[in-house]
Image (cartoon, rainbow, N blue to C red):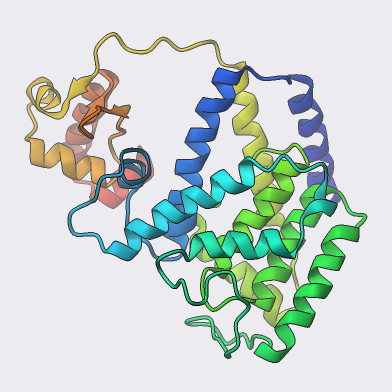
Amino acid sequence: MKDIIEIIKNKKTKFDALKPFSKTFLTNIEDWYKTELTYTSNAIEGNTLTRQETAIVIEKGLTIEGKSITEHLEAINHAKAYEYISSMNLENIKKINKQIILKINEIILQNIDSQNAGLYRNIPVRIAGSTVVLPNPLKVPDLMDRFIDWLQNSKKNPPEIAIEAHFKFVSIHPFIDGNGRTARLLMNLILLTSGYPPLIIFKKNRIYYINSIEKGQLTGDLSDYEYFMFKAIEKSLDARLDLIKQPTIKTPTKLLKIGELAKETGETIHTLRYWTKMELLKVTKYSEGGYQLYSPDVIKQAKKIRKLQKEKRLTLAELKEII
């Protein structure tokens, strides 16, 4: 584990050497993180909004047909919670206190469970599908006081504190709901406060992520969990470094509406919408009216999908793995 910690330390040094970043870059990257973290964190908890649908909800304020009010509120609330932590500009981790943690959960549960939002639980809770026994609710206030005292006084380096804080927090499970999302936002607040980019846990890694936590809770063996989380921090640094080093990419002169894309590819609009929903095609941006706009590069992607389907008879799930 020491090797990966050293690798992270070296990449953080390279990352810091590229600062300061332009206001335009920071604005664009923050908007991207807000959407991506909202989508991935909610998806881990079972929210069925796709990445594109999440963007429409939080950027355009539009509703998605067939999706529940709760799923819309989860997207809106998480985006607001991320805005809250990303705008704090704390001097150091020691400034993270009980009020901040309660506020994160309050925002997460706003208009979903307002009665319990931002309040420690007073009832027993269980994690669905898990045999982990969580602390008695009477012990939660004291456990959280100890947790915050540890957080403010830990001498470990920020990545270690961040992932340990996440594990400790979900093991206390202090709230009736929103514990996972609150834990991930708290972890990222620690990283942001320490000058690191946010850590993203992708939907495809959900099972491994959950199982590694449960293994640690049941056996005390945190090796799988720690390795997974440290690698996630490393990948976040790699992604930010790659993005900064890339030359400025010119915006395509003309983005395609879905009808225009259908004409260019010979596919039906229904098919293109389905491929987009399945994340086989990427939407470049949305019009003021919320319509999907595609880069001309997507024409080649759509043709490739159709070719693979015909030649190799691949399912959409198999195509997603390849593409």
